[in-house]
Image: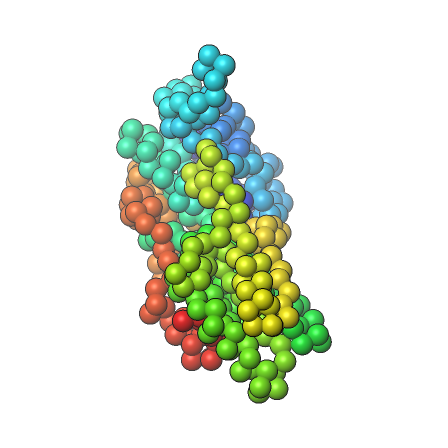
Length: 359
């Protein structure tokens, strides 16, 4: 083992640079070289590699984003290419393997969510040594208790709720905060409990708009003339569908969710006469410096990935289980999304606090 490559794929999140730093610093302890792959799997196809030294990663621990760049498109197995002037997807995976061989890369450390790790799994099936590192603010990867980036995103949402409380109380309004999470409600649930929300709506529990309105009206009768609602972007009304903002062909997941906050607010005003204001937190949840928890978790993941490479353990993902970083089969990590179970302890806590879940 002489040379490792590292890439960041999918959406950005706080802590990516912390992982890159940990990989380079840990590899340096063992005399290993590290190449950074620019812009995710796009750089792997195009052979865009850069050497990463200790100097290159100095000072990046608190920085958001990724010094390598990222993309949630450019799947090498369905790579957009021009064929006789026509744009169509081609399998460029063999080009990636040739680029790796030419560069002398012995193993790939892929930092990503379910899309990037599914691509990584395909390269593992082709026989190339791959180790996955779990990244996503959505916290929806199986086989790990937590992904880095999630806790910082929760902190951002919680801070937004703190600020919304003051204006909601001043104007006696219903405030709706739409947060990310795709098909999982982890961000909404954690931020909602931490931020003192009155209603939390998540994809795992289709909501009854009547229940939501009743909860707000009941608070008003109790003298509480404002309410705070947190809604996950993938939440949907009972018998309805998720709200799709637009489609992006070529992405691992072409569906971009968004708009449920506006729908919810409109329904509360139109059908129940409740004055409502909607805030969409959007990409603010992805940006900024990682908090201390995510810096530590990202550093542990990076060093554990290098250790796994030295041990010759490939086709795996490093994962947090309890207090330990363990190795799990990559297939296990991407088999299905980790959704909020109805028996989740925090969901039970939310109900015990009197938070309306819409059902």
